[in-house]
Image 1 (tube, each protein chain N blue to C red):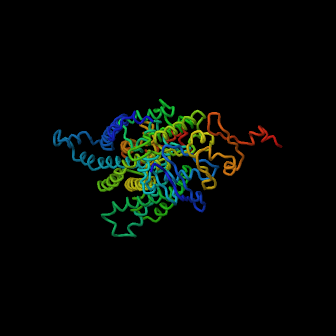
Image 2 (cartoon, chains in turn purple, orange; image 1 turned 120 degrees about the horizontal axis):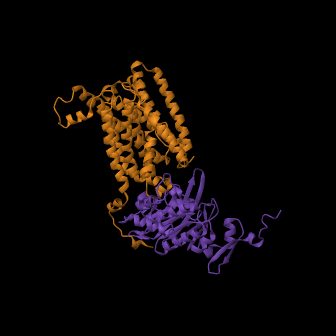
Image 3 (cartoon, rainbow over the protein chains, first blue to last red; image 1 turned 45 degrees about the vertical axis):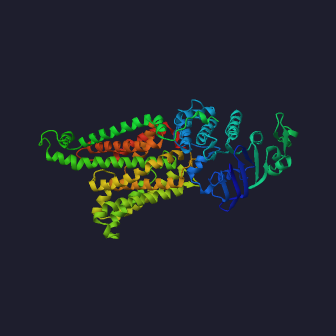
Length: 271
Length: 363
């Protein structure tokens, strides 16, 4: 049961229903991308899957009922990277990354070397002693990625696969680090771990996603492999604008906004 | 994945050894500082009583009549309880500040600034003025427990209201917290004023004594009560340090790292209220220890609560004992309220810190 699954998932905030009976399945070994317009319930879905928000319906992680797991048991099985994480006190980069080790299931003999390896993997070698507040937004996000990696260092643990759950992880990153993060996530999945990522960038989703879940108004609108999901009619229905999927020269699909493609620079010149 | 590059060891001891060298050295230095500060405070005072000769007497050294009974009395009965109570109150105030800052995720949170001390003061004033009328059975032997208990309840109520007012959907607004703290502090102050108005002469003396803050009322029964509250609170700190570290990354991140955030917050609120209440009950409002001590220590050893909390206890105790020595000697034979000393030293220092590091305001 190397999956994270949800059935008939319902989330309400006060009188608003954010998720209407959503069913979801992510398999270890794959990158599952959740995409959709603003307010479609992507983040809420991911928060429910990580146990952060109260929900109705069945959720399982590696075959166990999520709600029967204690916080520390979940922390050993899945780590969560938010779009942005602010650190309250002048912790060093190494301190922050080390928090991930404390939260995870592994007890490395030499935590300092694990911290340095994690920083190396996110391209921040030698940043360990810096105060995190002195870093740029993108660098801070990569520090958080290193922390999250330390929490679930082994893609497969004694008791099943580990899960990397990310909510718009690349929003603050430049294109090079967007690619680096997505490759890291894909490598994690290829090594047996599971990855769930909320993404806005459809092209990165198409390149690195094994499965895509398109959400609209708190429901799943389409699910499947990226080239099956990224169809003009599906995209028009979900996003409410004309998008043109193409075959990339390297294989796979890429998506272009269609009106801009047809009439470049005319969008503002019409009047 | 490079999992095989990291040797795995299920024991935690090796993990600790590698990282904690510097903070442990500073903790040891602070412990020595506590001893030195206590020595200075035992020696200082209006009387010329020599703490050294008394110490020699305790150790069984020197001639039996080398110490006058008067000196012995002054050091043993007057200065020693003050020093012990100063250490405990200083530790309680500094640790309360550090825990509250950790929970509010902001270095400006402090029981004094946020009105918790004023709330505890109102609780204590209520007990002093109305306690005798309301519940005769608790007078007498239980006074030592009833006063801290009332202060604790006042502090707890203020902390809960404050948290409820300034936190929406898991996010704490520091601006709201500080403003709400000012309002709650003013309310508690006004209610305390009404009690002062109602009080008779003896009650008025009791009220005045701790409204300025003083260690002058130190007695062993008070110390025993305070020590009990502190022992219970400190016992919980090792379990909270890791949670407070994780909480620095926000409530969601702390939950993702396996911390039971709600339980941590409840625990912290009870501990802050208990320690603030107990110290306000015995020594009145003593400001700035809770905000300056953790701040200085974060600059020196970093914000890791595993070291920050014990270091705050040591430095808070040492500083308050020194402040008390200053309060007793600067205008001898008269005595300055210790709250004035800590405010005179703490407030400019705090302003200087703010000006140097404006970004921490985060408003």
